[in-house]
Image 1 (cartoon, helix red, strand yellow):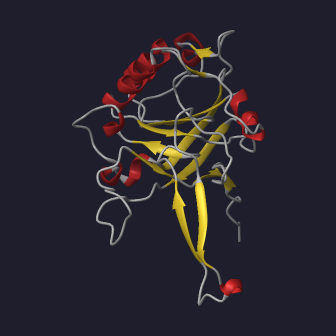
Image 2: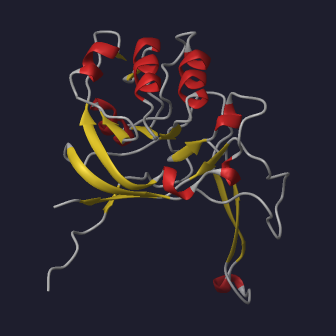
Length: 226
């Protein structure tokens, strides 16, 4: 009997001190009950941005009346996907011309593997990461892909001024965005993507108003398609 290829974890560990978008609140993990200290169980409290580490951007992130993360259709981020290598230009921008050579088709789930994946080994945020230009966002929106992933904290560049334009163009085209991937172990090619962000509606308990959210932490993995 043939066994399924092993899953490749493409999410990053969430931990205090990890690289974060400048200005985002830090990740705090506090043990508030500890068996070793006499508690009946171990119980932790977590405080973090919804955009820490590997996460999914919903339309609500940049569109006031857009869907929140709890309304994400499961099929958007579960199914066949392509890992594509992209390098960007001297300024780190991926332009439409680079993507046009990849023969991207309508409805595909595209994950961009760039030099960014090595940045997760650095302790601090790296400003000059590879990102989409407006022209690349326009190209993908016109292709009507289903989902787009990239291997750092944003599809748009840092302090470029066009970040809202890039995000809005993708999100208004119905493209769900996965940010903060680590594609080090994923070679370019075809995979089954499994990425399910927390369903942040109808919680039975929460320390803050959780619905609707514009993003949610996610655990993402790939299975090679033979």
